[in-house]
Length: 65
Image 1: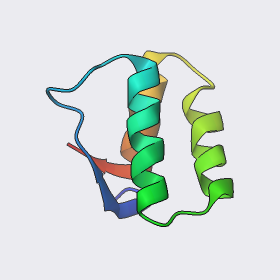
Image 2: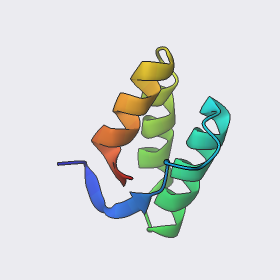
Image 3: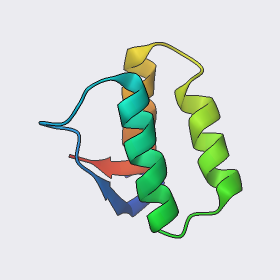
């Protein structure tokens, strides 16, 4: 179960570039009313590893489809 299951982000069929994914998830978190400190924590964690780590982090934080 993701940290914010109410935040839904479409990944399939979208640009798979790491920066595009980070932007899409950050935008969804902002629109969902998540505090900036939480969004910053997400970004820090997501960028702390490789591309696979980014995807795992996204799936731990939001409902990625």
